[in-house]
Image 1 (cartoon, rainbow, N blue to C red):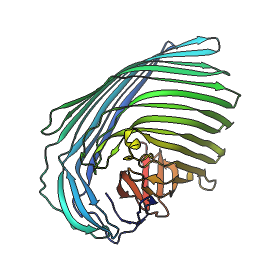
Image 2: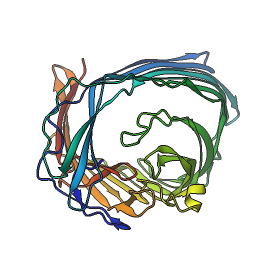
Image 3: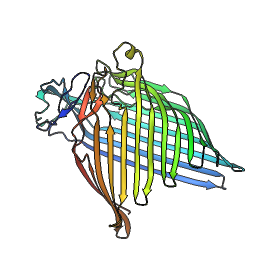
Image 4: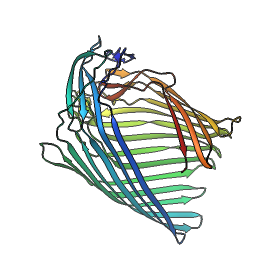
Length: 444
């Protein structure tokens, strides 16, 4: 998927040039409805017992969706155009959690034991897309309107049911440190019913756990370390895969981290830490089949500073410097590069919020993000170049009919940087140009 001529060369960075006309067809237009509701409860009993509960539901109903693919883009900008049109789809999820906690005091030390249960039910309906061959085109050429009726096919239903029960412990000793640990049994089932294919059920029943500790080296300096295992949902294969919309199995992950937390002032904190995250690696292979290709490791250092520099100036800034690596048979045979698709070695964020003194309730903000180059092909012979984006905004808090209200103006990509985003190995989309947002929020 590509939207714009590029100067891509093997083992080089890929820089786009602006197209002269709109690439997308005039019809159909995207239309979707999203809903979210939930409720929580928190009850304390007798000073030592605590009961917490939550119930949440979300749904995304897409009435119409379209994907515009430019395939086989050549150096002169010529390509083949393919439109993929989706019938109405629905993604929904209902989840809940119940936690019962009991606290104990032992001199200066505090101990808390938690017993919790979680459940999730997620029925999805998707697929059945219709494909329309747009013929030969160029990346700078316009697209005419496309009209129906469209020959949609039968859809896939994907139902995920997951339950978990766990036991956790937290211990705090003021002036010394903290310790936490937990274990959880999980029952995961994914039932996939695809047209003309026998029903497939993916099962996973892992026991996952976590342990973490912190030691107070001084009043202002804390050392911490932890290890966590987890179960992660993988979603479905992307639009440009030949197995588009195919549901993927859940994957087991692990994370190790350690570092230092420094309280510079009561309102300003600095964190520096090492991390090591490992998980299976899914992506497009040389045949454009989205599948398991090996394992990926993300090792690196993260640092952040957050809090008030002055009573009117707040900062949130941080950086991730990592060495991502893919391992497995594909790498050994030379079919898969050692760098995972789309993972930068550097990701830097800088945010300032200034409550200026001249207009009460008015604050100004800026956000800067920098990404280093990212591998764009499975064989690591093509990279997206480094990118820096700047956002500016203002927030005004005031009273509206006696209620608290906030008027917010935000401009993203202020310098109108023109660049690609990755949608998978060898698949590109354009990032948004300069966009302005204006919103008003108030209490009812």
